[in-house]
Image 1 (cartoon, rainbow, N blue to C red):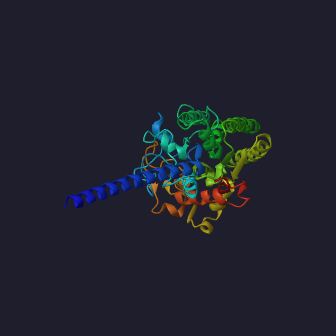
Image 2: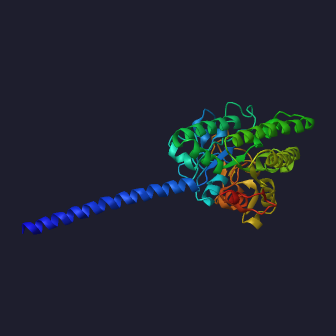
Image 3: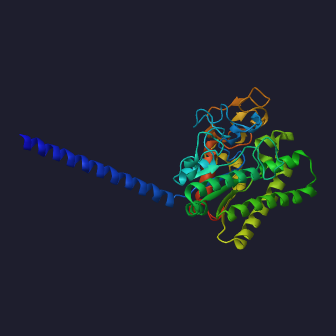
Length: 371
């Protein structure tokens, strides 16, 4: 009997040893898998304005004109609202999905820490411009967004070491949506058309400086959207006689888009390894405004949420000086969710064009080629 107990004890001991070894092997395998994932995945860093802002403006001292942290924003996907200027997800959210990444967190969101930023970070701020003075003091301008990125780069180097940090930054994709608010500010100040070209050059010059600094830090792959025909957005048309397009606004948008395209081509020749995906958001949006049914929308010229002509008054949510507003039954029927921002359904379509659009839409690369 004693021998039997001894054999049972040895058997149990042997089983326990095997379990410990198995667990250790699983841990080692998991660590290797995590390391392989780190080596392979491509991070996504996002800069810009309200088309890309995932909630940074929730954490700065501003006012509701530059925030979307209240109902009905986010109603189709997020509860509670996250600060995204739409009824659901934005273009970068879908790009992350297509790339196999989680939703990229807002950099200022206190719920996130260093480990989550390994997949990227969103620095965008609704209302921001390339120029520091655009809505100054109420938003996070592009220069400050770049400073946040520089701070994060230092944390990567500290936590990962120089080699892995350099690898992460060189593999990463950098998305930009900017310029809209700079030109809105220009036209609000009634500057002469002679001044427009000089102003565009100033915006492009400052934007180029940002691209250069990202290149110096190891970034190589830039994705940028053209700015839309701003004068045909509901918010602009609602203020025009007979709700027509504000053509001066459209002219300066075209000037900007041509200048960006030219500058990006120059940079590919000047900077080693520099690549860009220039998504023609202007044409994509215009086509859907003119022929919404072709793209699955019932309404292409007015917002789902707002008030006044074309629901073009910026009143969605009732917290921006106008308390009463209208809200459609199905945002997916609308190209625009509010007076200036696309619906989630539209954002998905735009993201698809950015991700794998033909060369006439996104060129010379599409984003899929970067991942």
